[in-house]
Length: 83
Length: 157
Image (tube, each protein chain N blue to C red):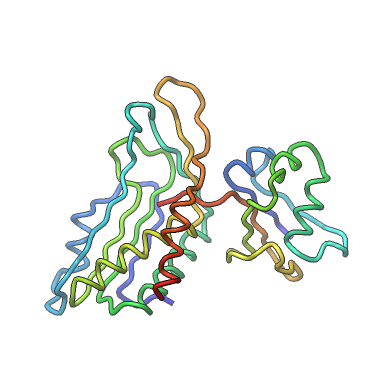
């Protein structure tokens, strides 16, 4: 699946997007965050307060307990500050 | 889905609030109220040189449309226009526009307020500050007050 990152999540990870191939044990968006965190310093920094991270699957907001099976695009970003 | 009278745009270019409002009401004889809200970039007492607004292309438009559809389901709107800019925005320049039109003022006022509260907390945009003294700015933190403002519509619903 394609992962996309925005704002300081993007800056801390150091790239705007990448393709991910998580192992079968990664079922929810929260699992994916935990799996990503272990990938290196930038990911650890981006997800250090993982509860604050917002997730969208195929461009729709979801909670971190949402299952990622079948997702084409999963996005991680901080709380929004538009308007 | 939003109705045929909803205009939603996400763009880098500035917008003309008066022109958008005029376009929404042109030729209409059924409308009794039009509310126009424009959000501006402020300089934070001279501290800020600009705001940089990042967005999630595709989802930004989709999420604004979802919020607009909620407003249309909740209030009898005769017209609706929402424009949100992205990119580098200078103090004094407009960031966001919400225009709501209805037969009576209450629906137009309330829908505009609802739309702004929900846009702030659910549309995928992020502001980064650029400081006037040349130092690197940081991302604007989300405010609990904005979450609370959006939450009050659930309680009132």
